[in-house]
Image (tube, rainbow, N blue to C red; front, side, top):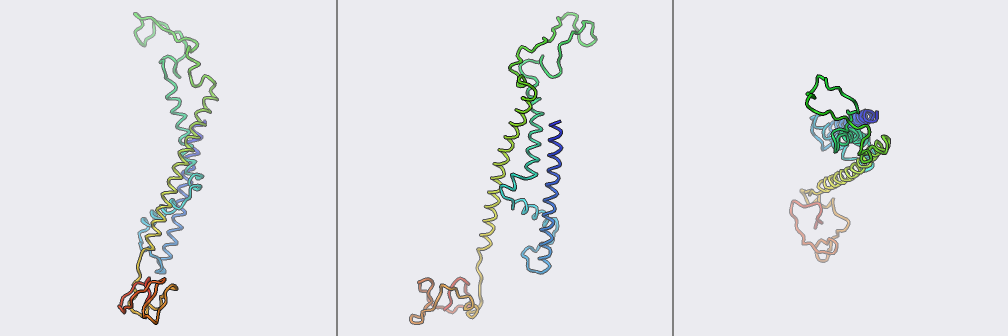
Length: 236
């Protein structure tokens, strides 16, 4: 019941998560299409598939560590891991040192005239009633205790891995956004005439009439009347 319940809830969680991402991405694409209609958006592509793909990536990368760790996607991963660990636990623990004590054996008498196998010249070995190595088995303390060990151990393990993954993903996304923002500010605006330059004088610039030079924070800059200037420089 626990295995199928975990797999079912985990499957429903990832379905709802995908629907939420799809809905948020469609809303973002709709906003960008409206911006494109007004010719004020730098996002000029009209490929809806590409826009939707980019929007999904942007929505996913915009999430913080808390939003990533406490999410339906995290619940999906944790429940699936816990459920599959219970299956794996039974597989690895069922057949250990002896092939006699497995989940499909039981002490039973089998007559020698059975049709399966040739027992005419061999001795029949019965499985002992009690397992001599019972204390070494992981379920020797009880089935409930063994199940809780598997569930809680895999649960905390999945949460630890999920927290580390969420922290790393949020950090990478934040660094990517910072690099994208800084690269967007690295540009030079060119003004064509001296009159346009004078309209963009910075507050830390002033003209020293006595020496006929422009000062930028106390530094003299020789005057020139070139027809093209950077907006960051002070005009003569």
